Amino acid sequence: MFEENLEAPENLNMHLNYYQKEDQVLLAVDCIIFGFDKENLKILLIKRNFEPEKGKWSLIGGFLKKNENLDEAAVRVLETLTGLNDIYLEQIHTYSKIDRDPGQRTISVAYFALIDVDSHRFDGIQIDSAHWFDIKEAPNLIFDHNEMIQKAKARLKRRALSKPIGFELLPEKFTMRQLQNLYESILDKKLDKRNFINKINSLDVLIKLDEKDMSVSRKGAYLYVFDKDKYEKKVEEDGFIFKI
Amino acid sequence: MFEENLEAPENLNMHLNYYQKEDQVLLAVDCIIFGFDKENLKILLIKRNFEPEKGKWSLIGGFLKKNENLDEAAVRVLETLTGLNDIYLEQIHTYSKIDRDPGQRTISVAYFALIDVDSHRFDGIQIDSAHWFDIKEAPNLIFDHNEMIQKAKARLKRRALSKPIGFELLPEKFTMRQLQNLYESILDKKLDKRNFINKINSLDVLIKLDEKDMSVSRKGAYLYVFDKDKYEKKVEEDGFIFKI
DNA sequence: TCAAAAGTGTTCGCTGTACACCCATGT
DNA sequence: ACATGGGTGTACAGCGAACACTTTTGA
Image (tube, rainbow over all chains, first blue to last red; front, side):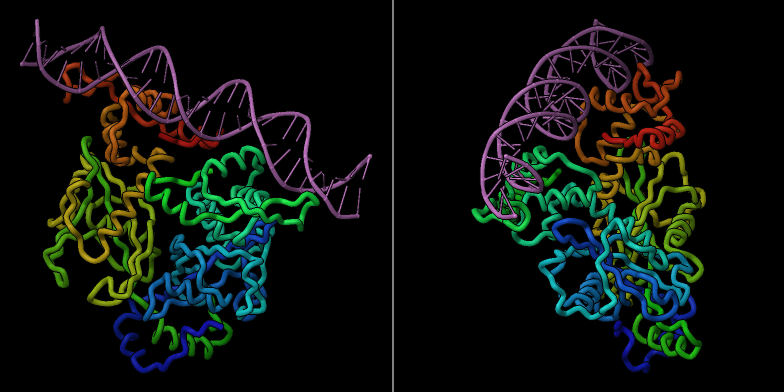
């Protein structure tokens, strides 16, 4: 599953002699993977099938390798799990409590990732014990992973209120209702439909299509796409800041 | 993380070998120490007296030890330098570019710290090559330390706009002008005197003393103290958020 | 015809911002 | 008397928040 540790142990001893005693530590990344299924905010977890804490739910993670930086390690871990490599990733915090991992002193750098659940059907999924949980119904996790999720949720909220980050979680085409559902999930509160739409429209970064999504209502709802070019031009020109 | 290696001691050793060969790294902390001298925002730097990059300016840092977590390491580094141990500290970001330190692969966790320059006269200062620079006039730094400072400044700005963090940087008693100077330094823009005072007063977390600071003007300026109890009570009761 | 979701504007209060003059005192 | 920084209030615009009814169409 995690193949960080599969090379020959030649210069192992050298390093052992120098650093094992005082200074070197294991460095891991753990990914808080948020998803959205057009209805609710989800989080991707795996069930451990090994000891300790076997059978318990955990974040996806892996160890940093010598030839990569942390961002690259997070991308690799994510790609190993999902087969995807074009995912929004952001470093959150580094956790270092001495006994946070009962097995061995391990420092872990938490990342959060945003995925559209439906568009990415995970053909490349490597771990069949992975499961999407509604963010409200996530189980208790091992180690300090609950704490990591709390921080990631706060970060997501903050990001959603400043950058149009939500669009990373949506399919290319989406309805206003879906966008609103997403923001309600992230902010964890109900929003007024008219105020929300007025606000979004005033930002002027969406393109309304002629197409309708007929799958939910009889009347059908217009589909929109995010106009990334327009958004980036605005950021450049007037320091435009997305704010809901 | 994932310690597949905890079932039996044999297993453990096997994995230990793997880890030491591949995964262990040096972990450092670097501190961005902000100070305020009643006039301007400052940053504390030291001149390196060892290779590599000897003679260049750098942040204060040190390596994580086995018996401490990162927060404790940051406290220790700061205390070693300044003799102070009751300082506001906050983790910012972890830097891991492969060749960021030409000497050896080192991952560094950046912290920012807030100190009132005048109240703390650094009797315990250990490194005589330390120097306070005006934030606008800081020299070029080694490695990725410039980048760290940029992020720390952004974090300080954000914090100053939500929590009354500025009071960490001020002496116990301060004038409105000093508080405004501080916020102008942090936000890097001029503020309107009347609007600032009105805003601060409406927050109702300062106590106006009868005492005046006569050192600057002929008229003298009233001194204030931050009412921490009142602030904390407000946070509890009405989820009060400091916002300037 | 009815059920279920989509779509659409206006009003009001608050908050941020712009702005100018008198006060107290030491020299 | 004057120079220096301290201290004070108002008016306006823009934004967020509250709020209800009509439209569409498949069943």
